[in-house]
View 1 (cartoon, rainbow, N blue to C red):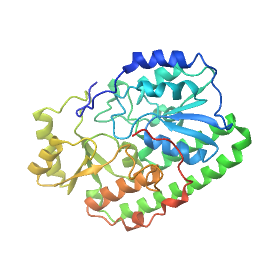
View 2 (view 1 turned 30 degrees about the vertical axis):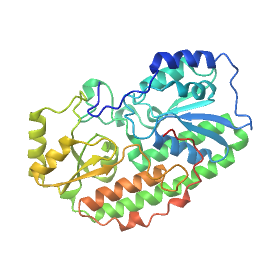
View 3 (view 1 turned 90 degrees about the vertical axis):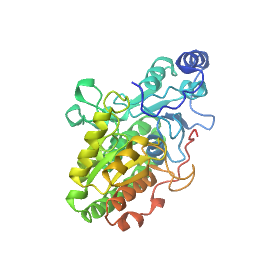
Length: 336
């Protein structure tokens, strides 16, 4: 599959990474020099959730740069050492990062744990299939982290896995989980309040990428379309015409694009349908800079939820008042 908006792949590719991983695996892997677990993660929201639980008791390193297409990303050679020395590798799963998963499974440190969070968090009968992820293609929508209760399931799994690998730190991991859960609950309550300020007819999303299916199911919103078809090729003129007609018929006040992957197609749809085009949503590109409070899963969700609610005519003040400081300081390494 190829995405509508392609970024040049990092040099080296899977073959170079496999060779480097093989060389790195010839050295003994262990916890970091200070005795902490070495943890490797993939996309930034997953990295943030893991870092919130790990606190200062594990080193956490993401390997998928923010703002790249995680569906097609292949780890560059620079990720070889991290994967080869990791005690635990957390991936989203549900076939989101297949190249990373395959390389970690085949070339990672012997004895390291490979944890697919989505596969553990959701039973197959809970999978959602939709515009970009049709059932016949065999890949469910993998963007579970846009639903706060599912993100909390991720955190619970992370807590249990870290505690099994480092029992001496289990109490610290549990305390960090409790802090994160408090932030998730506060976000969920604020989003429920913000949703209540929107008429049901306005709780509709047309997005550049089909990332909000689990969010919509939880909050009672409706995803009316995504411009990436199931083939991930560019939409046909017929597809575009149908989306324009759908936007007009449903009278949505805004449609949503990405600041990372600009969409001339969505601009065209907005212009011809006479609705506002908002191009700042983020799938997995955290706001701010690493170390900032808003550079976190909580900050990402608040930003996206506020953007959607305000653009559709609702009141997002409950979300704006959310305290991002309730989650432990994020000490993870994020590739930029």
